[in-house]
Length: 158
Image (tube, rainbow, N blue to C red; front, side, top):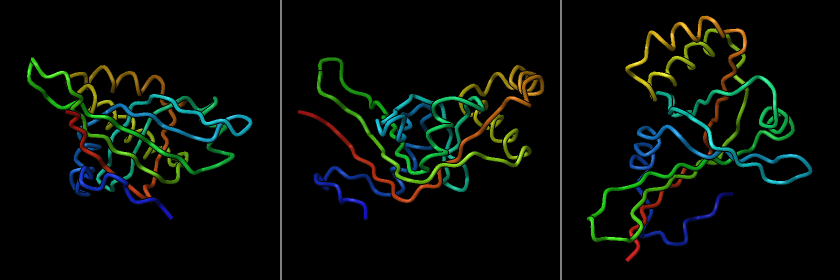
């Protein structure tokens, strides 16, 4: 069902792809938007222990409308790799996840995931986010991607 990578020599091992997802915190979520147009939006995320991807959003808007029409998504993360000062070539790892997205309905899981996301991105701001989450807990929405196919690629252009 999913295509094999054409440049297979650059393909990351499955664990390496998961590690890229685990280290990252910003990616592009792509859904089928209005009138069948693709809708890609940058969004913060974290990879859960269950290897599902969790992200925070408002409880209404384009993303929510789109996922209610079609739950199939792709999610892309790019990780810049270190390079030498005199090297202008591109050095990145990228990962594309294909899967199904859903609204997390369980409020306890929503609040737990929102805090996990905050700690993944801003680990030194625990008290701030704990207070913020308490104030805004009724408006918090978490999305969950269940991966069906993950592929990673290492690029080192010469």
